[in-house]
Figure 1: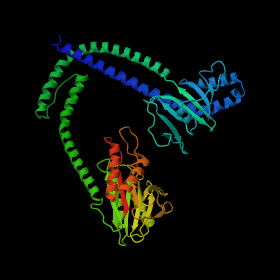
Figure 2: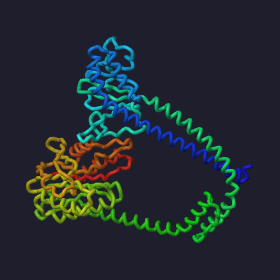
Figure 3: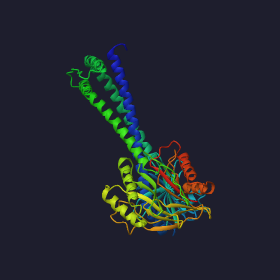
Figure 4: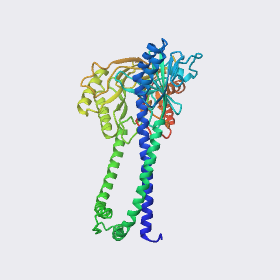
Length: 525
């Protein structure tokens, strides 16, 4: 029976439709799961934020004086507004349980003193931010800045990945006025019931569709045989390189569309070959552009009697937006900078190259602030509105052994003191080049006296924002630690640079880094 084209067509088409319905059903269930999960997560957090004050007010007005019934009515009315909240616990800052909805549905609890025994929950109660406990055991704190932007952090306020649709929330703790804390237990039972019903509906639809498909595929197989033969003959001719091949199929169904597509494909093959050649040419041009950008970086080690310099750049794409250079001036000083253009690709590479050339042209400007003002004026006028460049800009004076430092919206400079054996961040106010017309009142210069053995590190945000396979960030704490260790153990700027690069690349492992990783090391001899 399977030797019949009709039987093969029916079986193959029916199997295909069964697979498609199965995949589509799984996709729809997964999409619905994510949608409902996000709705529960967002709704529960919003509900917790909006009702915490009301629950506390009801507690102080009714339950605390002893009016359980009034409080129960008020609490029940609030809890009915969100079906995902399965339980509510009100505790004091010290962890004494004042109310637990699951145990006090009909009467107030009059037993012995209840306290929170879980140290993690106590920590969340005494925190200043709302926190989420996920099913995998992670605790995430919700941080809201003055502009109402929401960030997710850990207890130490280091940024962590935001919860996804796959992360189910076990409960939400909302501290209130450093006096109370409310724990909202979150239930996904209703969501699971709705998903189970959806699976049944999808299964019924898939079964009906399968039956109809088998019937239709059998009927259509007869009309498909001859057009398929014509397509086969046309394909053989096309395989020989005859791009003038056309097939004539008079039907207007899917086979007719396939025939029209086949004819169009034959017509487009020549154009596709030309596009392939064009892509190869663009690829070579991008490789050349990347080489040109790398040629702008210092090609050899700069030798100075009082200062040892080293720098390195690992771009995230063929053409990056980071740049650094060591530029000697007529006065004997040396300008050292590290810049980071917003974005990647050719536009970022062009802007960083322009900035490099501008700094060279302005290198004999003795006032670092004037140099920055003039550099910003050109970048602001000659770049697009959505592009800007942050920069750590320094000037080394070998006579006074001082480093002039200006921050144009860049990350803080790291200064390792050989005498005190510690690393400090030097933070200066500033704004990136290209954001405003005039930044003369927005930046300042700080003089840093470098003692023998002192170390200064400029770096791009690719370092602290580098992620490992678990999507955890490298972070400033680890960067300061490796700089501290390298400053203690290594003698040359090149060795220190290599040690820091080795540490971050080992941290990243096989994870693709999303931003350029750039560093400049200056060590006083």
